[in-house]
Image (cartoon, rainbow, N blue to C red; front, side, top):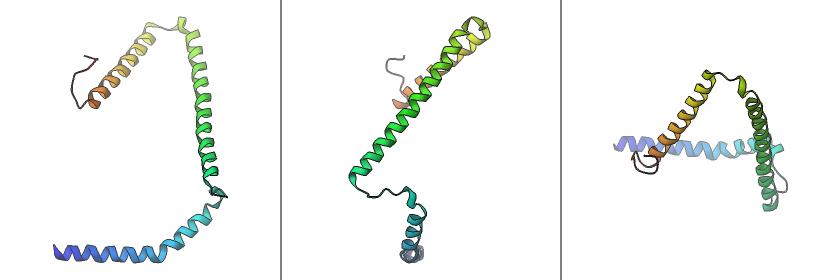
Length: 119
């Protein structure tokens, strides 16, 4: 046990020396390589601006995706008279599967107890 502890300590010492020697050089290379991503001046205001830009860019992309999905749903709704019984069966099975996954998630979330509003 003592030999393993001393071996672990020597390994940790070697790792610390390696990081102390090569860490700053690696960090400097990393910053130089990714200089285009660094915002100057780096102030709280510029960081807040970037976070707002990221938030609203993601919201805008989700908004566009939502409308595309809605347009495809409208197309499916227009063609609903061409659906066969098999298509309705597949849709019903999909709905049941979604409900069962929701139910399983609720049961798991309650710690595998079968109490609550689903039963």
